[in-house]
Image (cartoon, rainbow, N blue to C red):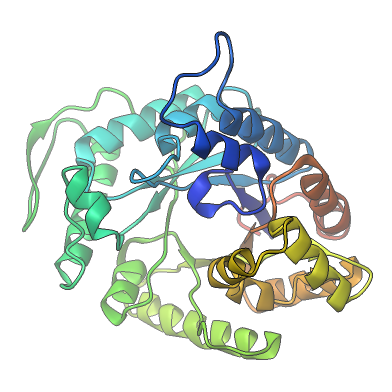
Length: 350
């Protein structure tokens, strides 16, 4: 089992005063010599995550918002780390594959073998239109485009010059004179839920962030839904002679009981306790809180074992990003797991 976390950025972060401060001041200049508080938080939490044994960071991408650009933030953090990997989000509707191939190879060589790509097919029409792209939200062409996008990225990593002619892209003798740092190229993570999206995952992805029924009422409902979803992708991949690995994103918060942990999570996320904040909490992380990882540490450890036994190999935790919560996950989940099972960074094919 590997363990990961999100880099603290506004559109995936709850309960952070530093993020709120960064958003509020995002359009204005910083005080002389000051650094953006979102960067200070990211640096502190993510370096602590590495110290606690986390394996990978997801730098999510959101252009229409106060989020720092994912490749810039990921590169800055990566320059300070030694072991933890950086998974950086990219949307084919906003980037050219040739450029992403070079950016990824560059980061992989600067942090030898420690970068990965999160391929995002996307949904935010306004964002993509505003920044010069297209989501193709209502047609399956976006999945064809994503498949071609990744074929070009991998092709350019493998050979130079490289040519390609497809439905959406044409590459003529493109030269990439920087390859990835290791013989095995950076891994590709992605998420989708539509039937055509699952076909894409089976065809091109190394990892799938497993989707499940958001109407599931209990942890057992969630587990059953995960099992069904994983089997669907397994079957699709097997028909193509491939194997896709599975990742999942539960929300984690500890307490002496489930009730206390849930109450503590709400206090952390909504410190003023307003009804509007609680509503936003339920919309943003409510489903992830049904995953059996909000409660006493021994209960959460048992749930992690269940995820592992069902075939999930990466848990990318959602939690309130601060030093204390990061340390608690390291102490209560990662260290006991490594003591029992060994270090996933030394056994990546666990």
